[in-house]
Length: 311
Image 1 (tube, rainbow, N blue to C red):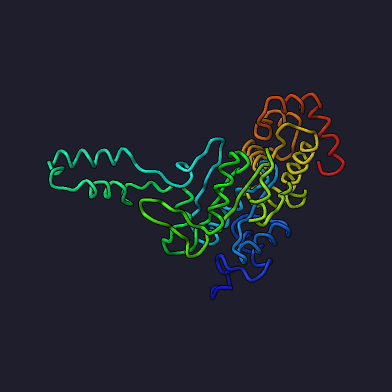
Image 2: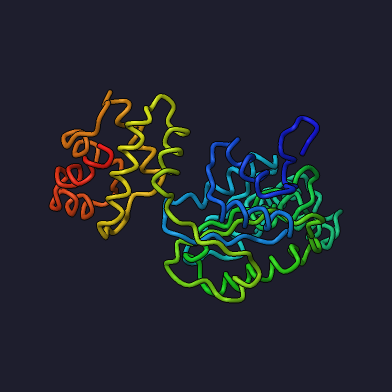
């Protein structure tokens, strides 16, 4: 603990300290998630979080950055991502302008070719992408590197990523090797659209992030939507959890639960009704097919099934 009595940023002494720190930044973890975050921070190991979209995986990295004070560096993965987008590239337009400036000044006869080439490949023309930024030692708290949706990237990129995480260094042939003196906090997320390779999993600590329980989702809604009553928060959580059991293409995540609660609050709803649910269904379900399935199932039937328990 710090002298102020608050959890020491980035150096937790217990799981309870992690829970307190995340709660202080409006994130309510379950015990399993808090434990694996504690271990990842103490062991300085990457943390691979898998789970359905919307369960709060990305938010973990944001909260850790807010807590530790480290810069949040986000690498959004996608099919075809390569070194230029992930690690570094050279600013060719600035290099060209530099050459033209030398020519305009008439200095090309006075400057050796090797010197010109050396200048062109100096740090002033280096574009640092997320992985290089994460391993540069710039002082202050280590950054939080979020490698988001790694399952969208190609196998080749995953193998390259494994190389970087082995010793937290990046070699730029023209400049040398950049190496982190203190490893960044690394959070890797996957929606499991494909299996992440075993080699990467062995490098990381692993946790499957579930949708929150009913009780915890009520707490999350009350925390993230100021002004919502406990009664309305319970109704929102109950309906959302019921919808997740309908086999939808994209079940609502926690973010959608919060959006729906905010929408109902703005509309002045004190209770969830069939009309209000139908009118605001777009805050919960982002695919037309899912909306049609719920409408076919019957919004009224869903509310009636829950009425005896919570509504």
